[in-house]
Length: 260
Image (cartoon, rainbow, N blue to C red; front, side):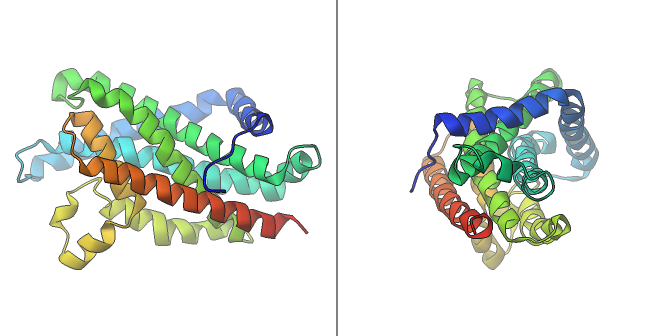
């Protein structure tokens, strides 16, 4: 299985998560809108007063594509991590679903797609904020910005699969903190969100190329600014291949854990 298999039963898993979300959408919406606004204004304008980029670009313009890439990542990670662990271990939702004609692969695929959907929704919120600020600081510079949403979905599949893979190994929800501290936070800081990766030392710069977030940032930067590069094709293919590998891995790992 090299691609994500979607069936009617997969859709019903996704729909179940969507219905739960709709009951608490106000609480789930407030922070994803407020947080990127704080980051864009606080770092972009506050810290940006002391940052001078070699390109001459304003710092708030530079970090906008990074925020569009990084904050949906956090949403997909949270959904594939803590939320999925709760459904699997505490609420026993997985057990209930696989007692029906829904298979475990259907459940996991539905979870991955739901994590990606949450990432797209988070990306949409951030775009609304960025568009609202554009008349003042020119954050969105191209109509190609609409392609940030499908790019966010592809990235969400990758990060959701990554988080679910971590979830399949932990024995308590608190252990997910190790995954975040050792994998996600370093990637967040050196993945090209807050400063150009070219500014890193040679070894760290090479290592950063293998970080998933860096390729997502490259894609989103091209779509937000309209400055497209052939390297974006490589970024897209890299994300697709890593997503396929992670998806295969999480299916195997969840079968190992849940099928006795």
